[in-house]
Length: 363
Ligand code: 9MR
Image (cartoon, helix red, strand yellow):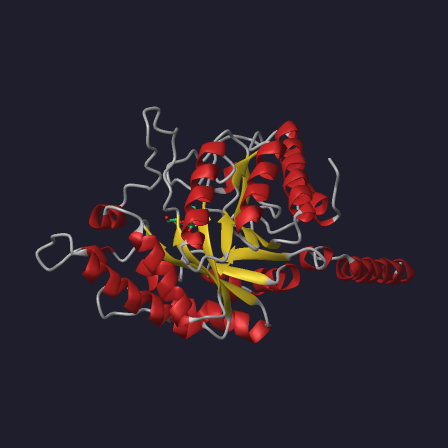
């Protein structure tokens, strides 16, 4: 009996030991991709404070994006009021662990400091007032994190969705409050100019979703090309990568990266996730797939799509510097657990999709 017990515990000890060893000896995502590009993750406060989640972040990733905590409204909710606590915590986590920080985002129509657009009577301000407020905001944020932030999404999602205007000129810009105040694209140019003034070393990105859709892709391409020719300091294009198991096709992903590579030296996939329904993009209205159970077929389609995305990106490793997942696990995903969008499941365990990505699966 006693012998049996000893044998039982010895075996348990052995399996724990070999289990831990197997885990340690297996490559992480960042190691698997070290000759290609960095692997990033968007984090919330829990991800960097919970010990299990933060060790997963440290093990797998070498670039971090703050999911929400560095956005305009998060750090600058009112004129003269700065709220740095959460952003600082993420920056400090990066500093302490030697992880690079992708700055997200200096200007965006969403989660914006709405106050910047209005005067005390709630009338729209002049573009001069808006630019001065943008300048102060961008300089302050960029300066604070300059030691740790290596690149910034300077302008996020300024291009509109939808088909080209069939009659004549296509107006490519989202009709945001920025656009209403300026009537043209000067606010985008100014944002890049202010960011460059504040940190000449940061790599400056224009970042958008549905970036593989041929119409939107061409709008982004034309805008960046034209602005760069005019001397606007845009260094890179961020492809958000909010995809689904049906699309975009390999051809459309390939065509978009190749096109962007003609005009910029840096391309990042900034917000990658692959949901299991037909929706895509960064819009805030989407289905949470309530009560839907993931099928084997959907899992496999997701693995295939992840394999495709990473294969294309590896082929463009000369310009592709970083691929970032938008959230750590399905539990954290902005899309909700039932969209099943990430390589780690709701228990933070790697799915087969994780192995397909890490081992360059060729599905
Ligand atoms: O993941 C973010 C979510 O928690 C916020 O509620 C949302 C608010 O607009 O923003 C999400 O992140 C967005 C990112 O900053 C920019 N591209 C689209 C992302 C998904 O909406």
